Amino acid sequence: MRSLSEKTQLIVITHNKITMEAADILVGVTMSEPGVSRMVAVDVEQAVQMAAN
Image 1 (cartoon, one colour):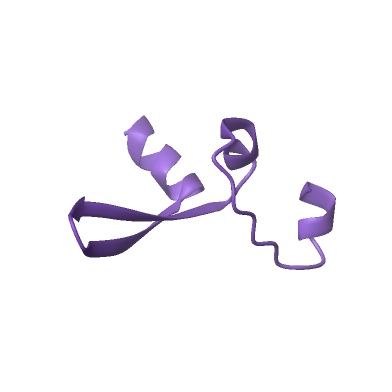
Image 2: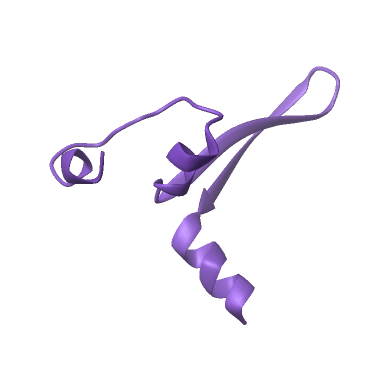
């Protein structure tokens, strides 16, 4: 998956933790209240840096 992503953009739909660990950016949809969906994106590298501080 890494070598393929160097040449093209990949969109993977999964709940597999190992697959998500390979991602650079995670995008998800959350529903904190019924009927209201919200899109959430996380830059994994930036999140790791924030967690280290």
